[in-house]
Image (cartoon, rainbow, N blue to C red; front, side, top):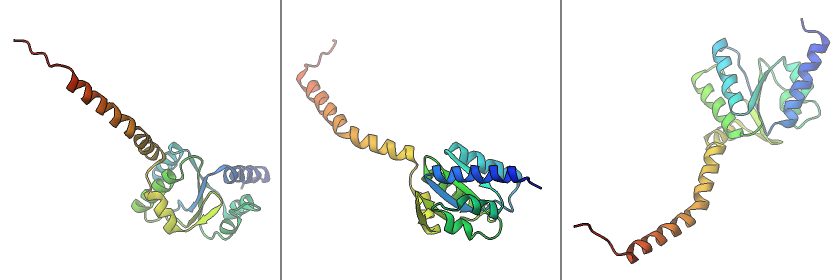
Length: 167
């Protein structure tokens, strides 16, 4: 049995995550092996996220007065909250892939920022490229005109210079 102090620590921890997170996903981890749960937590941690599992009453207390109060207060059955602190698409992709291989895990709902999103919207978010992939594409787009200009200058230089052959 947990003490009141332990419960208060859990509530404070989850509340802090809710306030800091860029995205919040409601899911569950019941019915999966301990190794799978550890693997999922590690993947989410590597994507700058966190998974919190606690009793629904504690999760509801933590969400009270926040944007997530409505959905979290209505939780029934075993639940977990997955938070993203940097790249919501990466965490959503990890949860989607994991739920595809583990039927017991399901995405219920979520929040992107403070906006509530449905499971269909979570699926769309999960299909987006990761933050690093998007930044790479953006950089390539910015660099394309400069690269093309350099190639043209190099071609002009090649045309102007006489070719020397060693005979």
